Image 1 (tube, helix red, strand yellow):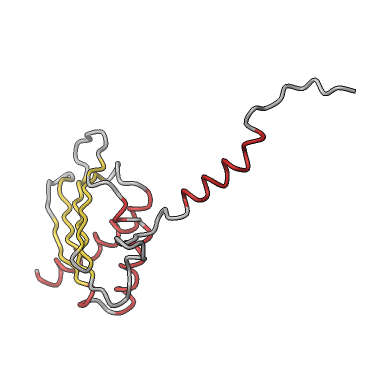
Image 2: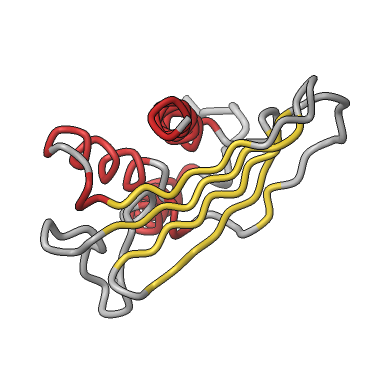
Length: 148
């Protein structure tokens, strides 16, 4: 008995396609240096410049966070958030539709002399960047409260 069902032309190529996709995605979400090594090593100092502007009152909040000045757990958390965001792989500008009274963010991370800046808004920020933005907002609040 013959099989009269239509043949799927992709079916024979699916395993190769899947393997290619997995290989391509293998490095996603990692911050790799120029030689392909992971960018975050414990011995490297991390400095983050964070600016939040806009909002309903148009207030500007800024902070500079240096990993050497953080308690060990907070330093580890910051490095983890930067790594999980795939920060060095994000585009410099992440635009979104203009919305009144929304916050705008500028985040600059410097590690071992290598620097990358990302500018975005609260609605355009990709999901993987949001935990870092939340942590930086809180760190900026603490810095403002400490310095008056």
